[in-house]
Image (tube, rainbow, N blue to C red; front, side, top):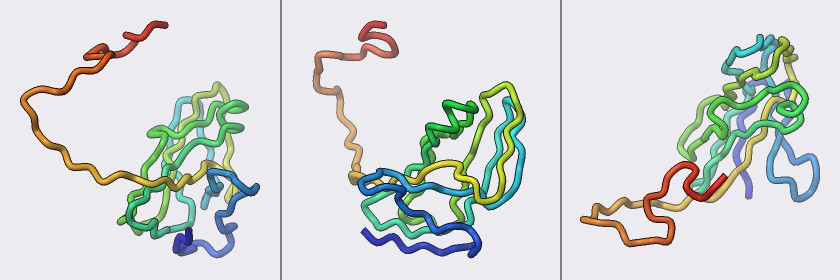
Length: 142
């Protein structure tokens, strides 16, 4: 699938898959910044994309940053709708106990493009039954 990409910062790398078959492409920081413990920041990536209709982009954390430093994506995954044409930004949070420095060009998150179903909600008087029923959080055990 071809995804039109506008580089808003020509000095940053173009997103690409690191290995054949990878699900996500790395997004890089457009700025130098420091995330203090418990702080969150919106970090620009220097790219804008035109995701095809019928698809959406999910901005997900990088597992290495999460495991080693406690860096996550606040609204993970973030959602890039097919009609959005602005700069892709990542809302990062530092769950760790130490400040975390981000340098311009550092890989901060990944973009995963997935198909989406068109949804039409139809009001009904009652929902069909299921084996789970209305059991909520924790209803299936530990």
